[in-house]
Image 1 (tube, rainbow, N blue to C red):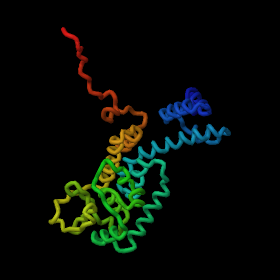
Image 2 (cartoon, one colour; image 1 turned 45 degrees about the vertical axis):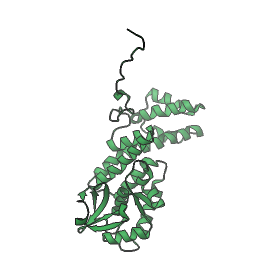
Image 3 (cartoon, rainbow, N blue to C red; image 1 turned 90 degrees about the vertical axis):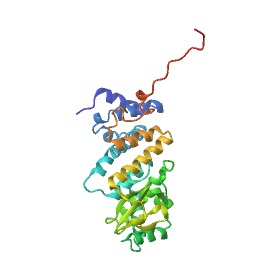
Length: 280
């Protein structure tokens, strides 16, 4: 099916030397994503380098949108590939990072971690301590603590993210269970609980607060939600919008009525009527 005339008109603006005109055209094309068909791929062959560069920008934005829409489907699937899900969460924040490089970082970490046995919680705790991995309490002020590539490189992350990383990479990860213990996250196995934020302490279940099972999909959603909260704290509308789309599964051209004020202006509280300072 041939593109509509107005789509062709928008495309014709991609070679405009005024960057503002071109950006507005790209934004409108993104809004009309479903109508583009194969047009972006065809325009990659344009002889105009300016058009090719701007089409590359358009395709990068389309790829990012589609990737975020897939996040909920990924964690709702019958078999989650946890390492891949952690990479996707990282890319929600650091969206210019390389997926293949992040996959390599996680695989390298797994090899290093399993140079010694990690089949029990005590073995896992020893391996993490040997590698110098530290855990911090959950916080909406440290988005990097929920991004697996940064966590591995910096050797520090949130307790929740490190538990998920252990489940994804440890030899015994498939046997461990993610749990919530008061305000902390931990791992449960054979009557013992591992708490990363307590210097990788392993304690009998009866000696800690009752651990509550926390399904892995909810753990992944939690990490993404923490990034959303970080975006709200930093007042970054771009990240608020895109992470909310990943969490909600909302299409990119839908209204923002699933977001709170001030991101959905129609929800703005009514202001009290202005009172005159004069006398009656």
